[in-house]
Length: 166
Length: 353
Image 1 (spheres, chains in turn brown, green):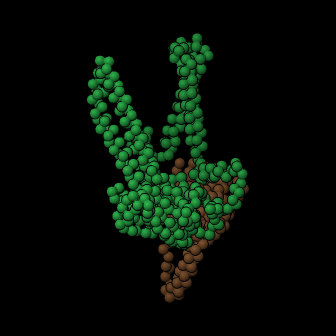
Image 2 (cartoon, chains in turn yellow, purple):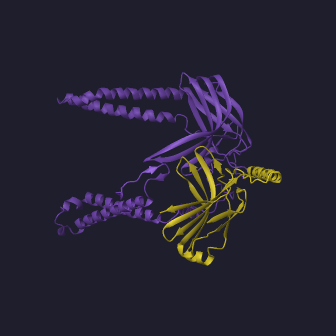
Image 3 (cartoon, helix red, strand yellow):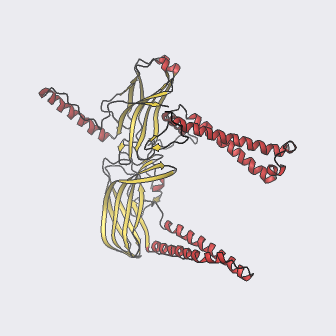
């Protein structure tokens, strides 16, 4: 399962539009019972989890058959103004696009693509930093042909796939 | 070697030591048992009420008396209702993701019973509206902020304890005296009166100490030029401390506190952490008289990258202005005044004051 966002830096401003694309592979139609795609925020940290879905789409077996699994699907939604992404000591507020697949054998497979919801100032600053990093990497590529991956601790890029056995 | 299935489960950090299925099965068995017990009890009540001749084993008076009929009837109906409700709730969660449950709850919240919001302002999910914070107009600034705990609320607990405990003690004293009067002394009760009197004296002294503190440390007033607050903007603040006291140190701070609730076993625990503190003023050797309260005009600069106020079901980020002082001869005091911080770039509706 693969979920991708319309922005490479995965940074969005409140009230902005988000487009996420997803694709499911290596699973046959007979194995899938239902599929849920959601854009949501949830908290992480010491406390119990708060979770709120902003956009939710559920496809049952017939709808999945009509849509097809191999084709790339997409969803579009307008993000709310709040809550903004936050990383504190006790609480973190995280946004993500989540794809959950219900298999006929009872298993659930989850794929997530995290993103940041920030203010306009922070988004502009991030884009400036990314542009500067890109310029620097271009210069270093010219001088040294070595692949130098930027540490992307803050910028979420890869989907996190979890398999839950019920 | 096959492991013997344990009927209980244990939580280790964020994961459970056993599968979720065991917990679900336990709950389903419990609610089914509750429902069947309710049905059984209701059947007994109804049979004893309407066809007592056909029941041999149970005495007709046991369940069909006027009071017994209602008590057992209500209990059995409550058991049936709890059982059915619990079963429906638990079974509805099977094969239902947390996202789907949240989406269903969100749809229910979106139904506007009274009508659409007349403000026509963009909604800020999870940001408290804080309308009650700007109810009072200020004398020096636009709004007078409401304290987290009203002045004098600390005295209610000691007052109730002292009053109730000493009332009970006097009732027991009357019982002991009447025992001596009618020639049947209650010696055990008389012996208990002495330790009870000690607790009564302690509770009364605690009440008097709290009363003196409340009377000595007068009300704290905080007024602000604008509300809600926006990161990167500047606000004027007026702080006043009344009473009759000398303060070794008084300080005014703007703080952002993370607050989180979590379950530990059957207890619900709260943990707080000050994520941000901005000291606005610190002053030493302050003298406060009833005629001359301590007053200050201050300025707050909210940092431009500050997180907005956030309130979830189990987590919160709260901003507040804290006035604290080390007083003599009274103990130190600390009064908090909550404020709401909105994210920048969102149109605001200010209170008309």
